[in-house]
Amino acid sequence: MAKFPANDIITLLDRRVPHNLGESTSRDLTLGELIELPGGAELPPALAGLSLGYGTSRGDAALRAFLADEAGVAPDEVLITPGGAAGLFLTTFTLCDPGDEVVTTAPNFPPTLDVITAVGCKLRRHRLDFDHGYRIEPDALRASLSPATRLVVLVTPHNPSGVAIETERLRALANVILTRCPNAYLVIDETYREATYGDRPAPATAAALSPRVLVISSLSKAMGAPGLRIGWLVCRDRALMDELLRAKMNMVISCSVVDEALALEVLRRKQRILAERRAMLQEAVSRVARWVEARGARVEWVRPDGGALCCVRLRPSVYDQAAVARFHAALPEQGAMVGRGPWFDEDDRVFRLGFGYLPLAQLDGALDAVSRALALAAG
Ligand SMILES: Cc1ncc(COP(=O)(O)O)c(C=O)c1O
Image (tube, rainbow, N blue to C red; front, side, top):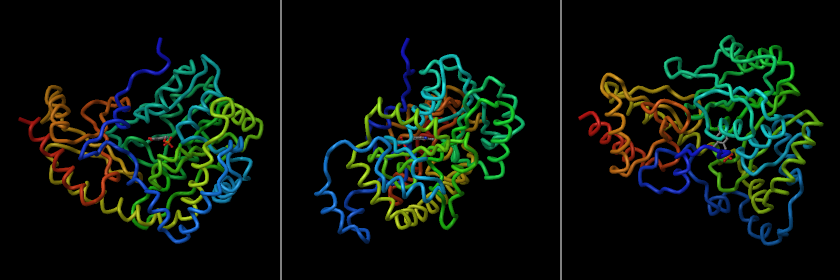
């Protein structure tokens, strides 16, 4: 049997469409932009002198020191990984034996769900509901846990909805998990944490919540640099960190030194990069809000708290199952793409709309293309 199930989300990597509302990142940062940002003129000489040997097993020391300082942990508690996706794989693979029970939310980022079954664990889905605004309730989560639960994976803000778990609620959830399942670790995926809107500050990282909490993040979403394939994992349990390090070494030996060097340059210019993107996301989410409001007879949405993504639902009163299929058939004819619900283990009448990837000047045109598909499908 295949270790990983087929999932059409892979088309996001390979299909190029003019109205791409399927992506979850903010606009791609370019190398040229990085060089033009203050301090960027130092970049080419620094890179020209870069030795293309293997990196270190934990990841570049300056990069880890920067991230550790931000998270309020020690540099040895940070492991650089080839993207947050590798962090998810490494933690699940390292912490769990075949047959172990792992709980995570559904809908979710597909690899989060599929890695669990690929390593032979029992996946227990904790359902989050569109009608409940994809909020997670500590009491409801308790019912999905058992003393045999080995790992719980939560994501905030959530993919596909952009709904965040407030700090107090996260603390309550961690309490429920760590008392109900004394052998469990909690992994919190914070990949979208810093993708906030306008002046809203990012919530603090949960890295220091408990030694049994691990945090995963990356440069991909808020910073718009997924092509660098740099993420990180914060783990304050030293023995577990040693195991994660050995797993990483066996999997990739080290990360790319070029990616690590550029990642540090991105982080040094982070405040400027984030400020520009947050202003853009604020404007984009406002336009999507107006777009949904104007089409309220046809669609409804859950307003996101962060990230460049949200969930939109086709109203059942207008779209029966055949009309939902017509909508998805009409989208490519209009040059448009969205993230289909089933990619994330969600109903097909819900889709993920990524509003941060296209430049603002192209967003309205892309939303118009979706409107045309909605009209065609409604008949
Ligand atoms: C919730 C979540 N976690 C992790 C990732 C992995 O991203 P990356 O490997 O680029 O950091 C993604 C990417 O879509 C995601 O949505």
